Image (cartoon, rainbow, N blue to C red):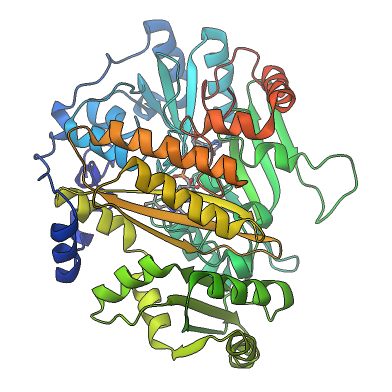
Length: 520
Ligand SMILES: Cc1cc2nc3c(=O)[nH]c(=O)nc-3n(C[C@H](O)[C@H](O)[C@H](O)COP(=O)(O)OP(=O)(O)OC[C@H]3O[C@@H](n4cnc5c(N)ncnc54)[C@H](O)[C@@H]3O)c2cc1C
């Protein structure tokens, strides 16, 4: 940690070196056979990183200090660098190379909603662009605006539970609360949010709302946007509070305007969410299906006819093979992990087993469920290890209706393999399941080549085009940021883009909030 509480150890990695995971030996062997590994050069130390010049003009700096107190306006190079990007693989590679094209001029840490309002007011007056920053885990360029200079509003001091209504089962949480701390504080009331994305360790409540995040147990608990009952938003024109009752027919639901708005319409300062009692029982188990289409069929039956599971995660043949080789076993087919949380999970599991067996599923018992639980947060650490080993690893995600899902799976795989023809592994799974369709999440592991960032840009564009052509959405849960912006505009059409621009102009007349992100 440095003097500003920054974890410098994490600078070029997802997690602290203390949590690092070595690649399983079998995976290292497989990689060496398949890929041309380019050993990663040592990362440039944080203090030596090149970035644009610091510090806003004197008048702005004085006004920022006046608004939040001098000690909460940070301009040191390490702090600015740490807030300059998110944590996509290209972001990590830029950090390792030690060259940042964007960095905030200052990182400002307001104490509360009133200070956020004051900051937005003064930044509007001085025409200074502003980036709201939660956990900094964006993987879509959501923290890298197109404005040449900006300041970052770091929400880490808004970190309290404001209210718990145990009768209604809601809790009001401040936006900067990291997910693990929110879980700890809710657990004191015997409650849980049930929102557990893979970025759980570092992401925040405000970030979840701003990006419409989705967790590993979304099939049972719902997406984060499903959980939100109310929001408070600070905008350059004042405060908006939406969500007065559990349901309402009072006009369009304006919560939806701010959920997924990615800091372009205002800064979310608190979020009221549905919470549930911590489940009395949990049970996770594995099933095998002969093929991905067979597994998809079975999962759809469960999603449409029940009983409802909490976790449903179906890996395709390649992901199953790679996962199984890590555990020294591999008998083909596709692995489904099913989890149940709540009361009477055994009875639910038994009813679901009858449905899965009728779809030719073969029960594998509790061990695959235990393995999944043990390793559910490993992937980002394994990405660090892959980058260290000289490989490249990144993800692509989408969602589609059931009738289109097999085609989306095929087309996106083909587009990636076409763009990265040699020794590329494309693994995929379905892990967020709805009555009408599901998400698809692809992990790509390939040789880095001489310019991995550029190579990936081409492959990602091909994958995004394939998603659009096959009828998927450009993002199911990572959000739009700058990376998906053009595909998002094409997906919603010109009139809807105009509508968004009009709303933004009303709330943010000086155009200071996250310029270039989400809204084309
Ligand atoms: C390894 C890894 C795994 C991931 N796994 C998942 C996953 O399983 N599911 C999932 O949904 N996502 C996942 N993500 C993506 C990311 O974690 C989510 O988008 C998360 O919701 C971002 O939260 P954050 O607090 O880190 O937000 P940040 O990254 O800080 O910000 C994200 C965007 O929201 C804006 N923003 C942040 N806070 C506010 C606020 N209070 N008000 C207004 N705007 C704000 C920012 O300006 C930015 O545009 C993963 C990312 C990584 C790196």
